[in-house]
Image (cartoon, rainbow, N blue to C red; front, side):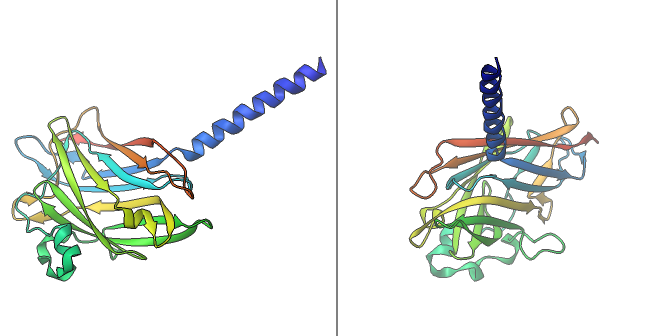
Amino acid sequence: MRKYLIVALAAVLSIAVAAIAVAQSAPTLTTKVTPTKAGKKSKPKGATFTLDAKTNRNDATASSIIITLPKNVRLSGKGFPTCTATQINDGAGAASCPAASKIKAPAGKQYPSSAEAVYGPAKTPTTFNIDVYVGGKNSLTFHVQGLVTKAINAPITGGKSGQKLTINIPPDLQQIGPLNAGLTRIQATLKAKRGKNNLVSTIGCASRKHRTGLKFVFNPNVQYPATGSSSASDTSACKKK
């Protein structure tokens, strides 16, 4: 009888450890849309969208980040001067971007976005500062600066049912020199106004919350073997105007 109890206890412990491991590897997402009073379809209201996403793992090289915006939050570069990833990467540099195309950093910060990663067998941590530009009516440009400097085009797709912002991470950011790298965190604050046009606006509030979705897609390699993808979601409180 004692033998069976020991075996059963061991099985329970192994399941508990496995559950903890799964929980630790799941990504986490924290978002906020302000002000909480939402606009209407007939009268959109300018807003600030903040995001803090963590992979919560160090065995994964992310190849893309897909952010599903709340149904009643709109992201648009309409009416703004633009600066594309091609313009920055092909020699003209960020200095050639129109000043009004650049998203200002929130108070107390130098950049509107940042990313954290680890690289190499030792999982050495590193940080990237990210300037954000309006890349077009339906795109943003993320200018990543750190051990590797690269501008990335991030298309905005979708419509009435909800928009998606997709950041495809290029190979030279997935691998730093000869060493593979793994994204561990990305933060961003998006807010801008140009005349009557807002980069982020709200057009309603459903069930008193704005729900944002997140998906990390992984590209396996020798140092960071994780495959597939992982997802998370978060809600931000809202109310009708």
